[in-house]
Image (cartoon, rainbow, N blue to C red; front, top):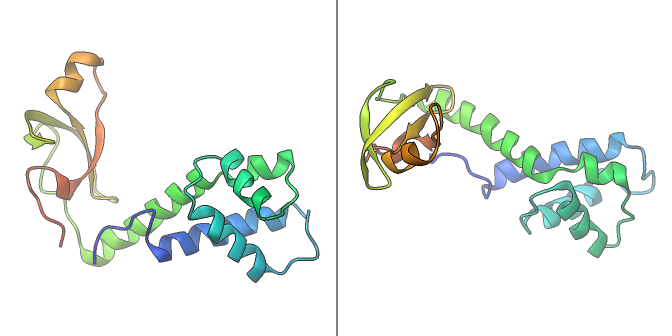
Length: 157
């Protein structure tokens, strides 16, 4: 099984469920059933909205009445990223994924030799990688959060 991503059906379904819960908690719509709400949320989410505003704009095109509470509650990007994180933790555990590098290791990332592992996140099988190019631009502690399988040619199972 591959690493979960924002485009996987099971991740989208999880995010839509959370968005539906948020919407229903607002108590704005007593006429629609959950299935219809989730269908519209799924269609809107597939358009890749990056904020509650963009999500609500998509829903507005479908005939939804939008208000400020909805824009605040339906932050699609946040909910989708949280669903990816949750499913990634489950994937790492189920597949017994282990990062092979430790803090301080020198690796190659995006073709940049001499990149350094600044942190290891074993629950999500990710590293914080600091490349030489990035080191010239930002101060200490900065880096890219990178899937462990993308460093040094380490392959996903």
